[in-house]
Length: 374
Image (cartoon, rainbow, N blue to C red):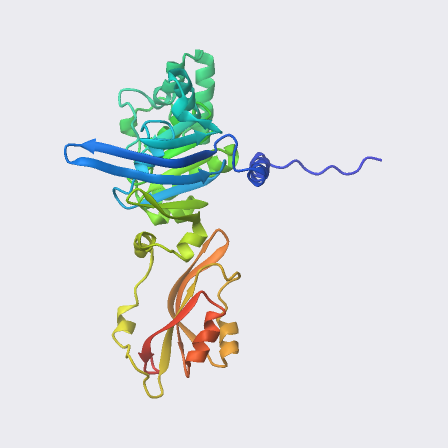
């Protein structure tokens, strides 16, 4: 007798499973990128400028990978070596196991069809409709009209622009223009999608919708997405791994939750500062540097995400044998890891109690003392 057959998995679930298995086997494969001792020097009347210096890095296939740094850190230079819009001065760029520096003109054309790119300012042709803008790479490649029309319909549906085929860019919102740019980048069915500050010209709500679209594309198509940005909030929202560049060198690199939760480099901490919250003014005004008779100690608890689980103030209070009052703070969840900072008030806290707290959180420190009616 035949057993009951399991319901087929949705297409997205199948894509996620295949992608996860591929990652577990090897970081190499379609869409994998490796930089080997990569350097880039620009020459000008003012002298030589070292934009990239000894970059050694591997980006596994199928990841959403973020590259961040302050202005002039080398982000754009690094991104553009992947499709040879920038030629390295030294070192190698390996895409799908091939040294692209050795490619002749024909091989380079094929590479650029496998590596799509979207831009900060959309780069749409104002005199052409949405359909014509998206179709342009296929027209240049000489594909038959029927095949072009079919592919254009597919990618416009994928980015949520059904019904916009015959609209001109001037009639589109910024978010819609970027969706056209994404559709055009996807029209050749690339293995890699490069995003050059793709959301910096958009308002926050539109930025969020574009980032969600990129995440959906990554999950459904399994392609590698590499994006550069100067906004840590963009990295937090969509990326799995992040590289922090500083003056053309790697400052640090790793899973987003790890880099955000416990930054090691001054450049990373500076980039994260806009996401942090200062001590509230009303509380800061009442802080005393020494214990106040009958008052409370204000303690900053920092969670890096490495502790596992969620912040549990009841458990901490039970461990210390005193009550804890939450005054202020923010906890984010990044890739399943809870991290952030909490300010709590407690009575009768000793140095030994602080050591006990440090066994349960990333770090704990006294920021001051207040009267008990805070």
